Length: 49
Image 1 (cartoon, rainbow, N blue to C red):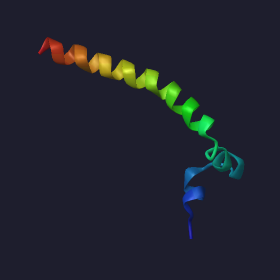
Image 2: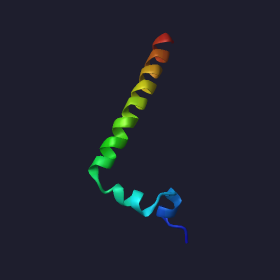
Image 3: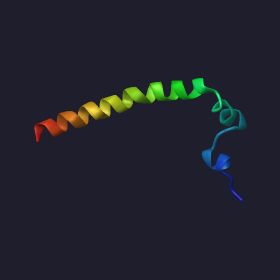
Image 4: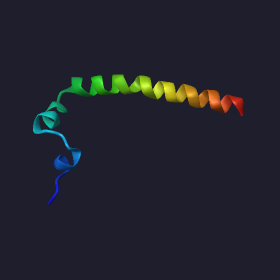
């Protein structure tokens, strides 16, 4: 069978790193800026209509 870990295409070490809370803080800190830009763009588009 094909496991979830194999589907992720990550190494064992990468999966283990996800147990560290800092892994998630760093991931979402980087993503938050991208989401903020998308939200700002959406708000500008909506304001025009």
